[in-house]
Image 1: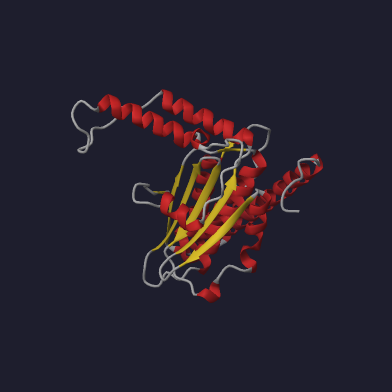
Image 2: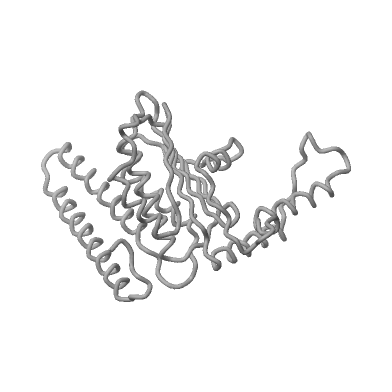
Amino acid sequence: MLSPDPHRPQDGVLLRELHHRVDKGIASAIDLVSAAVVRADGAEAKAALSDVVELLHGHAELHRALAMPRGEALNDAATYIRRLGCALRESLLDRMGIRLALTTESLPLQSERCWRLGLIVHDLIVNAARHACFDARPGEIKVKLARIGAVANCVVLDNGSRSARAAPGRELQISSDLAKGLGGRIEHGFAAEFTSVVLSLHLSEREQRASWSMATRRIRSPRPLRARSSVTPGSSSGLSDQVGRQAAIEADPNLLRARPNEPAPLCKGSDILGELLSPSHRMDAL
């Protein structure tokens, strides 16, 4: 079973017990190798074993970052994924010389759904790091998490090339199954010098209400607007109103839909890439 059944609380208990045992196993390995560092003769051997200890610490943090959040409260998927990205950088990406750029906006999700999203992002990043052919280019993986109306989108983009024969297969089947469990889907795109994966999923009513509440608070506390060259003198009031209306529409697309109770369609991967990875979206390196 990939995730606990909410109707079977014992599944959650078993999952936490498994997580605890793996955590203890990694801790035991760290203790054993640390003891070997003390007993080792020669600076080279000590340095090599110390590097193993550092690597194990990185994997321990990654294991903790992948734990399913506990409780019934909604969790910010942006915070969850940023911690996961930092752990992946320390345990894998830095050693491979691959840069990770991550930009997110707050996205409240139920605990299990937040965990599933994290598992998918982890799988996609690791797959890109291990199988992308960066040639002589510095390797880079970009992750973008955003909400468009009632749909959340996560894009994982790397600058490595892959042939059509390297199209996703069995190695990404778990991610596809997890996405289906979220009521979403995954789409892949390939080109000469980049590979993209787009995960799209509908938010639940509770998650939509939380997102709308957060967006409303941001609208009520607007930041001072910077003047733009295209704004004519005396038009600041009209511009402020226009920005406020646009932000409200983006926060609640039902304002523009004739039938607000109908779910918004999942966008095509190419449309999402154009929207989320446009030059106006800055990617922050971890």
